[in-house]
Every structure is written in structure tokens, then in C-alpha cells.
Image (cartoon, rainbow, N blue to C red; front, side, top):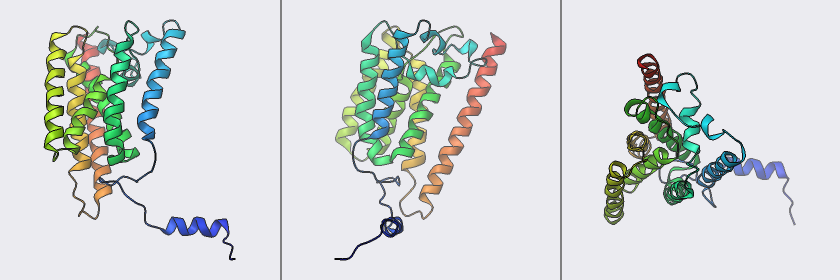
Length: 240
């Protein structure tokens, strides 16, 4: 019976072509790890909100102070209202649904990039459209980005599009009718989410530089988003 050394097996495995997801990411078996990690991080932060006095106040996004405390642009997307467990529960359920749909198709890197861009986009929407002293928190902006990205990924599935269209209309109505819902964050996250999805999904498989093009487009979008956030924070700072 022949015996192979560990190094030989590892070298042989590295020489095998990597399997790709439908949209060019690295194909991985098993659970959607990033989706579960995002949910776990949100729950962990929520526990800290209850355990550490004043912790929530250090996370929320208020446009007037974003220029001085820029971490709030992302921390606010991982904090939730302590007044209702439903806020956290509904957002986490939505992330689970759309994360399990998107992560296997996009791959971990692209899905993570999509999520973070959507979260920052939600913050940009708040900076541009909310009152300077309004305090906002929650993963709704990132979730809106995942939701609109799902439209792009599943654009050829008419039945799925009809079902998501109904949900989209209901969410738009609720955003303007129900008090306490940040339609500004939803709008910002939705726009950036769909743009990020287009950077990934609309590059044809026949393109030999598909992965490089996707990452360059995502990088360009990220730079534009960060520049827009910076300009918005400075504008709010001087007008405030």
C-alpha cells in the first residue's frame, strides 16, 4: 500500500482549480458562515447594550456628530432599539432569509462587501435626509441593500420577483406610515445595495477578467461612497 506525505497531498490540492459560485466567488460547502456571523454580532452587541450602561448612546448615528465620531456610521448598523425585541428579531430574520439566498451565490468576500456597502449607504441616506439631531440605529439599511440585491441576483425568476415586489411595496408604505422607521436609511441602503449587486452580477462569465473587474468596480463604489459620506458629514457639521 502506497503512502503519500502530507505536503504532497497539500500541494496536489493547491494545484486543483478552485470551484466557483455562480457569480465568481469561491465555492464553499456548508452553512453561510458570514450570514451567521453577522447575526451573531448583532445579537452580541444587543446583549452588551443591556449589560453596559450608556453603551447604546455610544453607537447610535446622529448626523450632527458623525464628523466627530465617525465610527457611528457603522456601529449604528449593529445596534438595535432596547424598547422592542421585535426590532432586532425582524432584522435578524430578514438577514437570515436574504443572506442564505445571496451568500452561496456570491461567495463570502462579495457578500461581506455587499453587506458593508449597504450599511454605509444606509448611514449616508441618514446623513443626507434626516434631521441633524435625530438618532438612528439598526440593521435596516444593510437589510434593504440585501433585499434589493436579491432582485438583481434573481432577476430571471419571475415568481420570486413578484413575491419580493409585494414585500418591497409593503416596506415602502410602512416606512412612510409607521413612525420610528428610518426610510432615509432604507433608501440609502437599498440604492447602494443594488449598485453593489450590479458590480458583481452583471459582469458576464465570458469575461476572462471577471473577478478582477468585479473587485475593481466594488472598490470604486466603496471609494465614492466613503467620499460622499465624508462630504455629507462635513456639510452637516458646518450647517449645524
